[in-house]
Amino acid sequence: MSMEATDKRRDLAMVAKRVAACTDCQLARGRTNAVPGEGNAEADIVFIGEGPGFYEDQQGRPFVGASGKFLDELLASIGLDRKRVYIANVVKCRPPQNRDPQPDEIAACRKHLDDQLGVIEPKVIVTLGRHSMQRYFPGEAISRVHGQPRRKDGVIVVPMYHPAAALHQGNLRRVIEADFRRLPDFLARVLEARKAAPAAGEPPIPAHLRAEANTPPATPPPPAEPESQQMRLL
Ligand code: URA
Image (cartoon, rainbow, N blue to C red; front, side):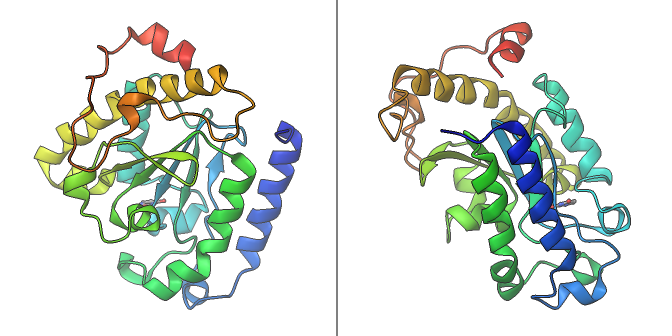
């Protein structure tokens, strides 16, 4: 049986406390604030970015700078906002000069993200950028797999470009926008499949979500539902 919302909120607050006190890697030394993550403890979708930047470090909140503004726009484009989803990062403290997080830092921080996902139990995880993609699909190239949902450990994971990359490379903007537009349909199908097989352990993965990298789905997904329908399904 899944946890009550209040239990989930309490458990996420406990993770946030552990994150705030964590000194398990060198990033702790340079932080102004740790950035555990924020959003709905019962979210169906969790977005995982890379790590806090300057503004996130100042405010202790994820995605509040330029890429956060774009992420908000992308969410709004599919009828969502931050209150409906959960947003986290693979590292919870800002890497100096916004450099890439190092493997040992990602490894040291992994338990916090594992704990958050264990509490929320999302139906769909969207990785933003290659560092969070590598958590699920090590060695994959984001240019090859972006936008393609795959099951990993019982959850549907959809790798996407990082919003910051899309902001800096104009052609990627249209790509990430198109990948986002397909999200409500993925989620609706996952929820439908769960409803159809509630007690069967692993819910069956819907046919067109059984995407192998580079293999187009056997049946193309139906056209996107009108926005009101998308919002109802989410
Ligand atoms: N980029 C990220 O990956 N995460 C943030 O929280 C902000 C910018």
